[in-house]
Amino acid sequence: MTLTYIWAEDLSHQIGFNGQLPWYLPADLKHFKELTMGHSIIMGRKTFTSLPNILPKRHHVILTKNQKLIQKYQRNSQVEIVSSLTELNSWLKYHKNEKNYVIGGRSVFQALISQVDYLEKTAIKANFIGNVTMPQIDYDKFVLIKSVAHQPDANNTYYYDFLTYQRK
Image (cartoon, rainbow, N blue to C red; front, side, top):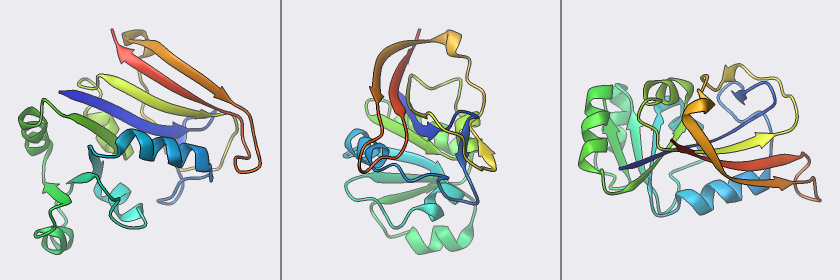
């Protein structure tokens, strides 16, 4: 199994504000799409409900006990609901030969930190108002294998880096 975290954070590790991203960075959205297309994306309920709709060409795995959500998506082949970490771990074990991306939120990142193989981090070189931070990651357990720095342009207001880490 390849389990990869994919997220963007600011200089103070903020990843969200009131259920949304605190910034608009089109290059990061494109990067996310390119990496996750054709793969499963794993998330909690709040992250799922923050999406504008079901993301095309991706299988959505949602960790929730919310009955309304379970009923709404029970017949949707693009959405799979797991109701516990035990069930999610069973799902991951069953899909061990696939590339799977964890996209949030904080509690899902926290719960799977010991299992993650790769980190795909967009480091935004700015500070934003946020109320959700990325859980602490022990970067001593990872090696940086790719770093691409970007400057602001007509569509992207901030300096940012795409960073890829692999577990040692």
